[in-house]
Image 1 (cartoon, rainbow, N blue to C red):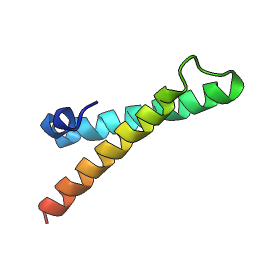
Image 2: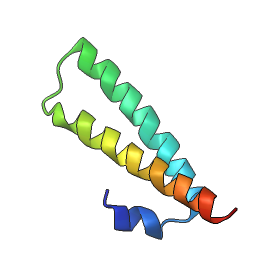
Image 3: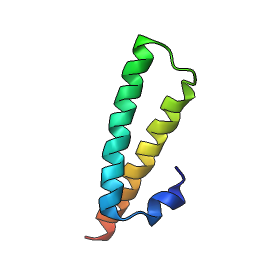
Image 4: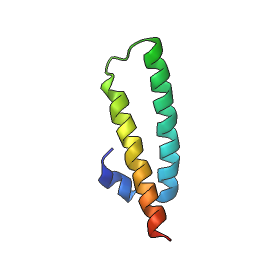
Length: 65
């Protein structure tokens, strides 16, 4: 997910999407520990997407103060 797409999302939607992505990340890690994924680079990509979402939420929090 691109940063431009994240910035367009409403805060409520962003929080919901972040929670879903974090659950997906945990499930992906568990699956990878049991049997290797076809594309383990997906883990890295998902981790970075989560970081982008958290960064955008933090920026919004700081701008609203």
